[in-house]
Length: 425
Ligand code: ADP
Image (cartoon, rainbow, N blue to C red; front, side, top):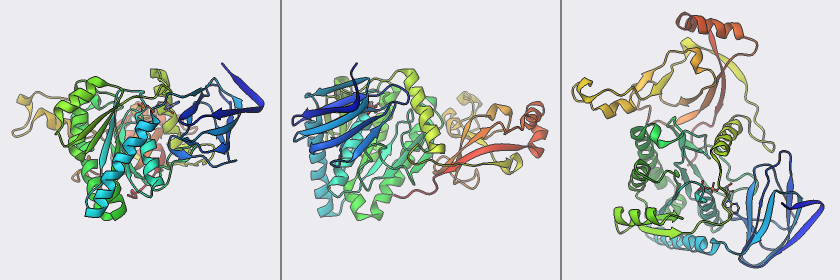
């Protein structure tokens, strides 16, 4: 464990090396300044003399191609310089995508769709961030699709989402998540409802590929697709489905030869499948930490963060004014299904939900669909709301608990809502 407090410490980095650090302690604050040379954090260039602040939970690598001096103050739990990084290989992937983009630009065709796949904690999201940053740094305007419902980095977990990337990610906060295109799934793993997962992925792929035609620069820039870390069995089938839905032209496989070989076998030979090493710096997260990250992301969606706080307000909505639905009916054998329907169809069925206290603390998605006759699954969502027990209105909840159906008419739900509205792609 190294401690660097008070006036801090200078780190001299040679070319092609990176300073890695982790902050685990609550209230710890680390400030990094680029004193000399050039450096970048996951593809975003650091500005010389600017102070960058990192807090608890930060797992960071500041990389330099040319060499640099960094000044660091604050207390870190892990801090070291590594000369073994796969950054040059990642840069080569970017260069290959650029070739596709230039060709697409010339011929007014769609740019490359590149998928990043691999098990959990191999740096998939980090590689996406690097590729997107490099793309915008050379004037591209790509889309970023996140199919990882486990973390839900763009919206919240349980959803798939796409954003337009127009500028490099902020060093401290990543990409801005305003105006995303979000489709609701409702489980933290695709295994929660495989049929629905494939349906929302297909829909998002269809809509985003279509939207590319609306902007020439985005069209030639293409899409970077992040995926779930579930790569075996059905998880692998989901990856193949996504690759087909997006018409991926490149698949970057991080750290798993088995997955790489399976993909080589199963995708058309026109798709470039590339095996890449994971960075030694990528930090493994325990189940608990993953859970914490999910919670943190939900909190951030509603309340923002210290730098950009949001102030959501609670308001009461009468249950009679709400229509609550869940997607997926309990499975029935094919023999019990109405003629012409398969058991699979039940998985995407929209089923009305009666409000009961069991809904308290559940996060619900607000759909743009106007009625269940609309394509609810295929309609993007406007935001999320959280059904809460009321402020000092426990009696009202008690009423709900005692007689949920009659209370429906009289009672109100305490709803904490946040909307991101229509996407900007
Ligand atoms: P995945 O998407 O495969 O689950 P992530 O890209 O989210 O993995 O990486 C896991 C964690 O490792 C993240 O907190 C990220 O900031 C950190 N990380 C990634 N690359 C490095 C690196 N080179 N040095 C230090 N930490 C890193």
